[in-house]
Image (cartoon, rainbow, N blue to C red; front, side, top):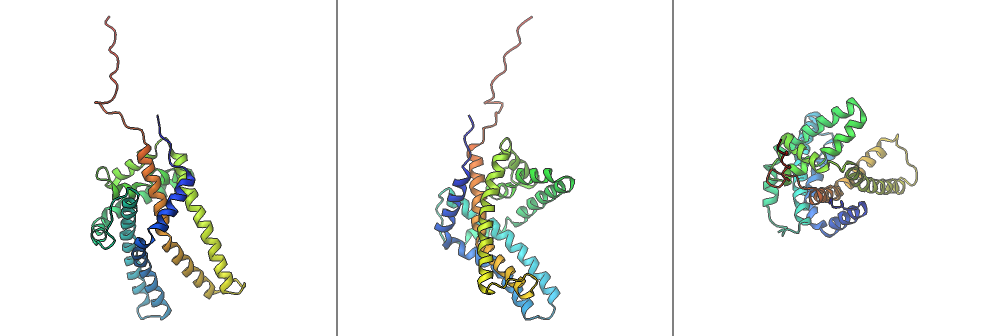
Amino acid sequence: MEKNLISISAVIKDGWNLYIDNFQKFVNPILILLAPYVLLFVVQYFEVPGLDALNLIILIVSVVINLWISILLIRLINDILIKKEINPSEESLYQSSVSMIASYFWVGIITAVITILGFILFIIPGIIFAIWYGFSGYVNVLEKENNKGYAALKTSKELVKGRWGKTFLRLVIPGLAIYFVVMVIIIGLMYAITGGNIDMMSYQQSVLLNILSTVIFLVLAPLFISFTNIVYNSLKETRMPTATPETAPTPPEAPLA
């Protein structure tokens, strides 16, 4: 008998509690994520010579840092979920996550290409692929077998198989709920800062909106990863075991003629 997946309300509640209760552990990763954006703002604001080249370098560094911290947060949050003892001062988690960047990046590229092709062919296949393969990065980072390249995508699909709709709702609704709240907060802040004179055609206001959005969503990055990690663990815990030659029932013998 199939076990029930964690409820949508539990995903939101557990993810929020994990984020709040462990926020101190997330401070350093958040600051590292913010660093390239702060540097980019400073370079552009002061019009540093060689701006185009610097922008390109910062962009590349930003991509590498995002990959690194994504891996780090997936591992850190998973350790919290399974109640593994974590030493906040331990550097091994940061260091060992660096060695996983190339593999994680490759899995991300394959997932992105397949999903984009699905959207190009028709929108519905793109959405289906996005959910099927949405956990491939988590498989790559957290599992020890079938976690490289296309094998990670196959493992992700096997987790979702037969539960696509339920998985879709548990991935999308928590994220949309937080996104809606954040957008309300951003609009409120923009209204307060501009004295109610919001003008999206204004360069200054568009820059301010970009800064607010970037900072808030980067600060909330561990929360979004928590939601996905919780769903991923629930999928693993509730999947039906695959019959093997040792465990599969023996077919009855054909009657003798």
